[in-house]
Image (cartoon, rainbow, N blue to C red; front, side, top):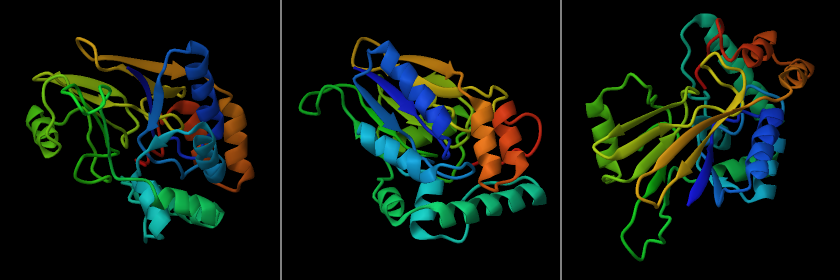
Length: 255
C-alpha cells in the first residue's frame, strides 16, 4: 500500500490544495492520512477542516486541534521568547474566534492516534501508527536529535516491531530514521514549515511490501496569496513572513 501522510496544515488552505493536487496528479496513492494541527496561525481553519472532510481524509488530533476543541487556556505551543509567546496567544485567540461550531465538533472528534494495517489485521503484517507529537502526548516534541533510546521507548509504548512505521509531526521539520527495523518518520509540515524551505511538505510511504519506503516531497504554492490572506485576516505580519521564509530566521514559534 502507498500512503500520503500530511501534517501541520495550520489553516493554510493554499498549501493544502497544492499538496492534494500533487497527490492527485501522481495518481498512485491508496489513502491519505493527516497527523493533526489543522488550524492555527493562518486564515482558513474552517475551510481546511471542510476540505479534508470533503476528501474523506481521516487523521488524528494535534495539540492545536485538541486545545481549540476544548477551549483550553493555551494552544500547547512552545515559545522561546516573550514575543513568540505573545504571537502564540494572538494566533490562538484568532482561531478560537474564527472556528465555527461544526469545525469545533470535527476537531473534537479526532482520535489521539491511528493504527493502520495494510494487510487488514486478520493476518500478520506491518503496522503504521500515526500520532502528532509522541504516543504519550501530542505536545511532546520528537525532534531529530532525540536519542535512539527515546525512540525505542516510544516504539515500545505502541508495541512496534521490525517492519513497522510510526509517523508524526508537531516539529514542522521532516526526518526519517530506521532503528532495529522500525521506521520513525516526521512528516514535516504542509502549511508552516520550519526547516527554511517555504514549500509545502508531505510524505509518501510504501508499506506492506518487503521493506517500507519513505519519500519526502516538497510542493510549491502561491505563498504570496497565502501571506496576503494572513494579513487581511488581521494576523501579524510575522506570520506572513514565516510562510515566505519557511521559518527562517526569526519569530520561530513551534506549533
